[in-house]
Amino acid sequence: MTKMAARASGGGAAGWRLLLLLAAAPAPVAAGGMLYPRETPSRERKELGGLWSFRADFSASRDAGFMQRWYRQPLRQTGPVIDMPVPASFNDITQDPSLENYIGWVWYEKEVLLPLRWLQDDLNTRVVLRFGSAHYYSIVWVNGVQVVEHEGGHLPFEADISSIIQGSPGVPCRITVALNNTLTPHTLPPGSIQYMNDKTRYPKNYFVQNIRFDFFNYAGIHRPVVLYTTPSVYIDDITVTTTSSESVAMVQYQVSVVGSTLYSLSLSLHDQEGKVVATGDGPAGELKVLNPNLWWPYLMHENPGYRYFLEVKMQAQANGALLEDVYTLPVGIRTVHVTSTQFLINGRPFYFHGVNKHEDADIRGKGLDWPLVVKDFNLLRWLGANSFRTSHYPYAEEIMDLCDAYGIVVIDECPGVGIKMSESFGNKSLQHHLVVMEELIRRDKNRPSVVMWSVANEPASELPPAAYYFKTVIAHTKALDPSRPVTFVTDANYALDRGAPYVDVICVNSYFSWYHDPGHLEVIPLQLTTQFENWYKTYQKPIIQSEYGADSVPGLHSDPPLMFSEEYQKAMLREYHSVFDKKRKEYVIGELIWNFADFMTNQDHI
Image (cartoon, rainbow, N blue to C red; front, side, top):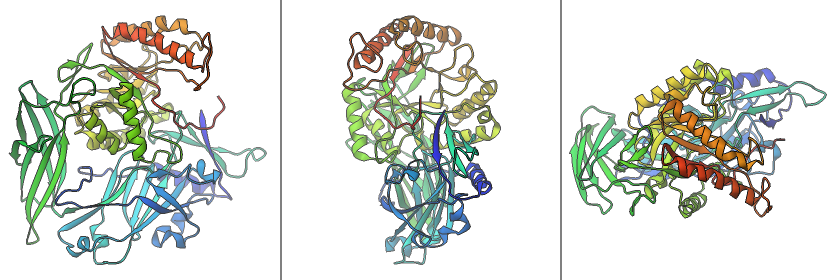
């Protein structure tokens, strides 16, 4: 078990526990759509990245910010603040070791001047504040008024702030955010707080955050924060699914409009040269595309990642004015189908030849960093990787955009990692897990690169409650999106796993000759072959080796190969690949190596 230590000065453990309860309380899930904020003829966007004021609440109970109502005044008036970049994790930015492993509430603030034109038409312009993600529990105020509360990291949330900002041209709009990164048995990912009460060994009120996953628990505002506008009657959501043959494709669409029931909709589908290939009208229907350019994975076609662009125009009368809203959605035409032995994209067998990743790097933590993102995609294509799994949480929308554009296939995983405790399989955890899947699907449902949902990584799926838990989560996911298969990633014994009956594809992690029988490369062919045969005999479902690998220290050499040498890693991969090459002719449909690049873990004695 890994731990993150944190110090609390002074008394107040009871108050801190109350704050934990607040952090674990379910926040309401936002209704409606979550379209990515794109600039269009009817929509403007203002980036709020850069330096924000930051203050960690080091009070013993971590509740000083609420007791003193820091959101009621500029944060700098409440006490010392520092500059904090957004997007970024706060952990590695300073030289303060107490921030590196801080657990509790931190506060961010940004003052921004809004364009006058946003404030002049108070009836017909809607202004929305949107966060790409923040870890993990967020409360947001604008000018001292609470506008949104959100539970969970890695996924976007937003609030309509039009009524709060109207009538104050030239006055800075003050955005205040309180974040709590505490993990409880009912969060995703789960965790627990442990108080160290032995005063001969630990300072007063000393506690640690226990987690059951092996990557660093970065926290902060990790993705872009933007303000964007829409008309008061606006396109709220678009859902697209596609079917195709060689000569014709059908693009089914549904559009929801908010703000009025009296509106008209027109749609036009453009190819990459801007030519209109199909048109439609109304809130639901289908577009017929002749001789379509299909969306193909990287290395599976000479023109991978082909996207059309669906332009949706809405017109409505409101407040005596004619309003128009325009939104353009990238669309990839492709189909996904799973048989007992194959994964088919556009009717052709697809083999996941890829990696697992993490979304972190030094200094910026999990903060979105464009140079790093583009470098990663160049490395992926240089490697010949056609896919990755978003281990172990949803990645930034900007990353997913590049997957769509480059033809990189994605297994889209929610933050269900470290679900090991029996209490994390109860109804409270289950209800939150269902909401997280709703938010993930709402965000990524239209992405051609996303071919499968993963609802968890290495849960304790052998426990009795896991059967009902995963049956429910998977059924809920399929009800939300019938167009994609669903899986979770297991490291349980095939005979004991209680969630596997409900998945469409078996994803299994194993580290033969590394965590098991370390140093004994000769056991891999037998053990890996037996693993595959046991799983397939039991479930008759295609199998992905969703993790495998060995650590190595660059430049460390050994002959004969010893663990941690480059030669040992190479030899281990050779043994695995020889089995993959045989079994992919039968029912193995992919191999995702652990891991694409180095990532941060907690300080821990192994």
